[in-house]
Length: 168
Image 1: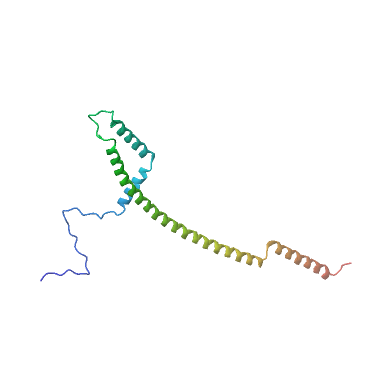
Image 2 (image 1 turned 30 degrees about the horizontal axis):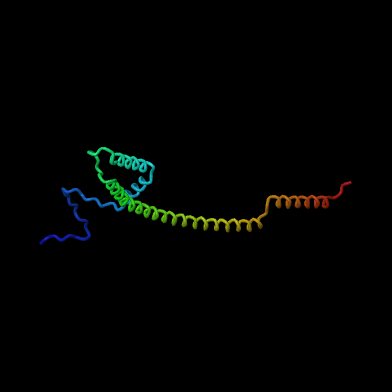
């Protein structure tokens, strides 16, 4: 009879020659989109794109070298390449914006929670300060105690003066 697998015991680890398949990272494409969108918004990209287009136009001008020209018609291939670049750049930029919006929303919620907590803490402290002020009104201050002690000393001196018999 075949031994049945027990559910209360862990399975034995099986060794395999094949490399273990890693789980795909769902954030990988998003990070790629953000880095691409970040690069597309730089002066470096604008400069390189300007150089590329200027070289293309210069090389493929109707009065340029006929033999080595790769865009025989007036810049149709250049238009195709730029349209293709734009058709890929636009969705990447939108994806990056959506991810940034989601991060901003989370940050805003955290800031709102922190602000609410700070407001609650300030309200608590204001109540505590108010209760301390009320309590201090009932506490004797140093000046009050000094004046009371002076009054007692004066009263005692007056009693002593009245109680002492007069000596001739």
